[in-house]
Length: 374
Ligand code: AOF
Ligand code: ZN
Image (cartoon, rainbow, N blue to C red; front, side, top):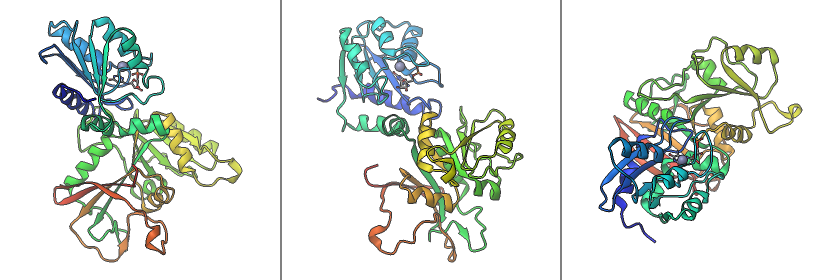
């Protein structure tokens, strides 16, 4: 089964891409409605959380243009929803508007939808065509929403670990100096990756050493990602630069300290005692359990920007789905690496990855690499 009319779906995918920063934690979805000659009647993409879904925006767009969508085909990059969430079901709106056919790139992995949207449309007499899973447009739609699919299916965020290093793989000089190895272009690019994530994560070591803000400043964004700090002993200073008004901050602690918790909460943070382990046995945050908790808090893509110790823990525990590595054309010689794990004594035990993409960014290289099967 192949789709006969891919162009409107290409347009719908481009619209979905335009929702990259605004849609999370909702999936980025685009919709194009066409008449029988493939003229566009209306189009749109997912709005801010709680706002309209792509189909509703497209229906409104058609109306604003004075176009009737009775008998039209709707191309949508995700199965139209059938449930009442923060908004009403798109299926019902499509049926009520008189849409004759729906072409969808891929089923919605949300258990509240997953196939029920298609069933509901078919039951109302709407023709439904779903693209084959290996169609490039279906793959692109899934890739665009890799974090949403991860949260819905695996119940854990898509963990993207960002690192920057010299060409000989060093993130800091022997004396600890690390700012700045990569160029401004790479740092700006790094902010664009932060912007698309639902949350940025770091560790208490980085907070105490660098006093970072870890927000998005170098690119325009309609939405700041949340911040997550792995802070086992609740050592985040109350005057840390990361506290900015209105920001959602989750601090995961292993040791209970009610006084510090209360003080941090006055700064707007939410303190979570590390889930998953008995209080008596824990002194470190259980990262896998923390990730499950973050998924329950609607974190799709988690952007990790941490020091080599926490990076090493994520890698050692097999929790990294994607490595985002910037390499500068510089040799540092003695110094420290990007992540501390091991020692590995035989090459068979190395963490093997495959390169997903390699792009020049300014004078540097940006490499995306993934473990097998991701
Ligand atoms: C669509 N079109 O553009 C998007 C969909 O809380 P709500 O009402 O916003 O619903 C969120 C869920 O709706 C989300 O988890 C996913 O299953 C679906 N997203 N569906 O038909 C869209 N963004
Ligand atoms: Zn919907």
